Image (cartoon, rainbow over all chains, first blue to last red):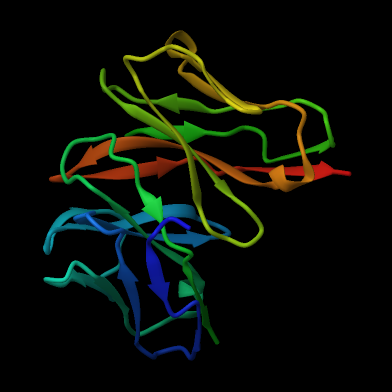
Length: 115
Length: 116
């Protein structure tokens, strides 16, 4: 158990809908990262927050947004969902912010299925 | 841009065999960090090891060992006396600085099947 929690575990929805994925980092970690894992794209970095502020952006679509709250939990919002958004979404946390080399500890993931 | 290659898509071995998973990376940075993660069938990503570019010592942890060679930009992972529980997808990752934060660039993964 990494100490990172994600809810829900599974989510099934329809095209055009909007969903929210939730993540709580490990105790003491200030950074939260979101990743998307799909069969064709592999593991792709979406976005990083540190102590409530956006720090890095990867291949995140404009239909997707995220935020980190004062209690450090984070939410990833996915809107106008398409079939291709079906994937496993991971949240990870680490203690640091900028620079490299901080180990990221991953949550169990949320499996999103868009029908 | 940084890149991680894991040329072996799938490997099958029989229990108790040794197996090496290859990882080759590309980076222009002089300081960088490499990681290995395991994704068992249950789906979670489990951290195995972190290595910085200044430390070229090989590392051994139980049946696991890692061989870091800067000269060939490789960070290979060996499992000795493999067990069925080692069956998983293994990912190699390279840490890169992005904007004001960091990101992991993951390789495509190697699926290891250990047969009884």
